[in-house]
Length: 493
Image (cartoon, rainbow, N blue to C red; front, side, top):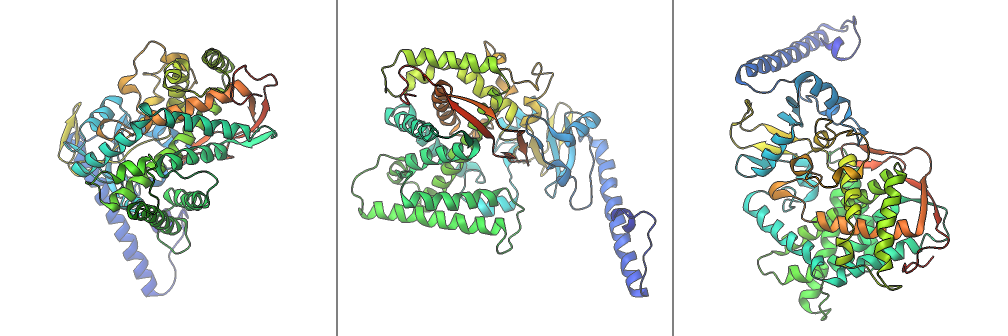
């Protein structure tokens, strides 16, 4: 048994009698674990629990499930398991018996029944790095209250023209910095842009302020640890991330104290001002909300921008139609006039491009849920206490739901509802509160990009799901300003 597990077929255990006995005991122990696990799965066959495999002892199939793959595919694990067991299957992941759902109806059912039949249940290491008050990990009434506050904050762009103008100014500043460059690493540029936007809206910090640079440095450390092996060893990415989060929290807490003491007597009109005016939010909740908003506004939005640029590079027709839409918008504005809400509403094909980039790219592959009671759905039993993983990418790339699902085709969004077939930002009570703001930033960025630049990908690069998504080379682009520019563009090439 040991030789089989170690991949050395036919080898024998040698050494003293004690060591031989120890090896045999371990061997028998592992054999017993495997026998019990398979026996349990056989018994479960009789209770309509979906078919599947227990995988290895202890680890189950976690490592195979998390094997990196291109994010516009479902990966070899799901391809193999869905072909063998169907779109709803069972496994053993993250230390728990698990139902994996690649079925869009079951996914929607799970998301819509939050806190009734299912509950958010992320692995404990995630709690350690995000904090116990993060919206990603809190449940029940605590989550409803914090999400309501976050939604109120992120929706202020609809009523405050200044926010849209700030976004537009930041876009212009970013593309202006490219004027004398022939090559950029787009993912870096996108992250820099989204961070500068979100830190301005939340804390009124400008890009060139020392405090902004300090927060960004800690935030980069935090992000690396968030997607690393969750083992707290001093010096390891996870441990460094926990410390980075503590430093960011300390910085935000100091800003809160300064404003409370009246060190800065002028109201900033930012998200933090709104938070501080809410007497029902504790200081720790304020700090946690700020970190949640920074995380969502930074990483998710920059990935969305990178997806749109990457996939547009594969479709000259889509790029041309997008450019024509933005030319039409620009002709109605005087030179140097900023984009506004009405302009955003006219970006209909842009919305199609963004939605299709989200469908193909899959920022979020799956989410973690747990069954609060025995649940029956379509004849299947989901036992109480079992993990449930709704897999969004499998639905987005399902050829029975989306014709030519592997192709980037923004026109598929014209005149048709998507409903349950599309969940790039989650769904139900946990739908990402900043989803629309991410689309606004991306649309404004595309406006100036397509009117002022031509670009091509330098070498091979594509988004990889680890399961977090990143471009292996950061999406290097060769860029060239459009010589005449477009009349009225604030960038004015």
